[in-house]
Image (cartoon, rainbow over all chains, first blue to last red; front, side, top):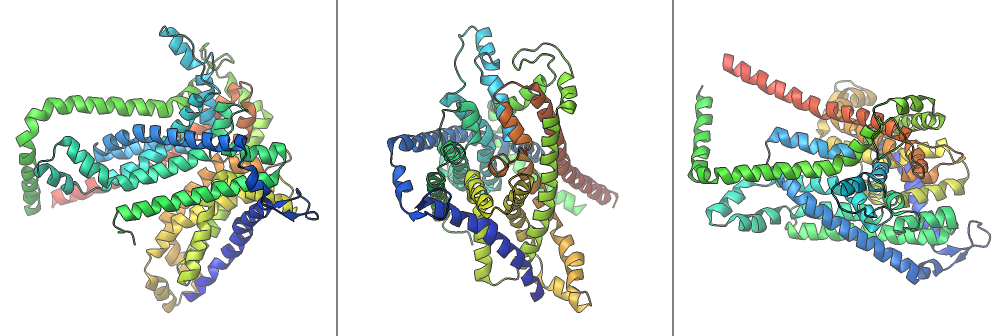
Length: 277
Length: 299
């Protein structure tokens, strides 16, 4: 059995070259200046300082704001749905969850493309509004369009972890609470919701992280002038050509995300009394 | 027979509990149920709205994406003659297949090796393995873009895209295969080798069959991850090589119902695959259950 140990060697080399080394390169670009030639390379923190400029700060704040709004809407829509699904018969649950996952497998680009035709000024939504007697509204290239696209794309990531926790829940605890005289809302607030917190945290983390690093949906539904962190990074690399600054933003984004994940894990294990291994 | 009685007794106990408050709540329950069906329906409508719109307008006879002008298949006919789209489909499918094969092999042998490593090394590898999973796509993408352009070994295009896809698919294979390997009995492979199997035989005849579900999950994940990818492909490609996502991205500036026809075909293929993958095991299970029940009854 010992000889199988050698099987990890290819991946160690592989991940050193293709996973770790690119990160080292990003870091190198972030702390240097002098563009792409190695001759006049100079170490500097300029790229990080540049991020404090008001234009970039506003991009970060907007990403944060949209991330929070998207997460709240996903939680508000997703939690009741996960709860209702968990109340169905087992076979119905399997089918419903399957139909929640199916959109996740379909290309985001293709689904976002459809949103454009729905939200356009003379699109389906406006035709419906007109038909109902309301005036036309402007959706495309606004926060509303971006949030709608993000929620539609990310909702499954919220529903699935919450549903998993709800179905794994020990139902005798609910019965115990009922027997001890808790009313419907007390049972929900003090027992069901509390026990589903790990799933909620999981879903919130996933949705928030995917939303703040989103790049395609804001670009397609928010327009070319609509900048979130992801679009800023793309712009620096593909249009402006300032790889140093683009790398610095990426480093910050990656670190922020790592921090959030660790924080959420800590909250989760504290809350659960550390019952994970 | 005795078992059956025990079962019904249990059921009675539960039913008694319910009956106490059941009748009063009956009406309330019904309206509640209707409410939740309505809510589930609404959210599903929202989730599936873009998919339905795409599918419906792919059969529209005019170029409009908002006004229905009658049924036609002209966009499907157009699809077969659109060279860009055909090329993109070919790139997407071939890269997804190749990336899946390579990352499944690499991921599986790594997962097997991983279970035999010392703890420190194992944790180290698993942490590194998590990097592409946790990192936002765009950071992975620019990392690879910098790598490929600074090495200068590959010309940007098909090969860089393929490598990038293998790189981000492999971690998913490892994370789906490794738990299965860990759950294996350590002595199985040893027993096989004691009985005269070579290590290679132990691997193919004992270990592989037992971790098959994990490998299968890894294959499915990496194929769809690769087939769906836009961000990484967009950054590492070059020389006009595009997959479906990139073509769609470039087409968003002008309306092109051909994309809807393509989407519809992709959606149908994915939905059928997902239904088969998920429902066949379920139906098989149910079949088993009814078979077992029948057997019990005849006894």
